[in-house]
Length: 101
Image (cartoon, rainbow, N blue to C red; front, side, top):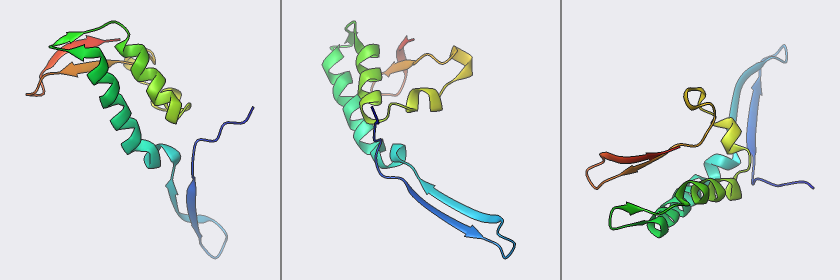
């Protein structure tokens, strides 16, 4: 099965010897970024009520992100937490009130 992640835009500039001088890439993750963020926000609204975080938030966020871009989890791997997704729940002032991993 072949998965399509979205539009890939690329532009290459070569010098006279045929070596790459400049590359410009717009990858599907960039194109889908706004939709990914909105979907994560929607998932958070579903799982966070009155300051209480319901079980399942972490799985829901990961599912949403992978729905748009199945490669993002590996591409954005954080070696400090061994590649596991970490979700930080913040209050209105931007203070972290809960960290899920």
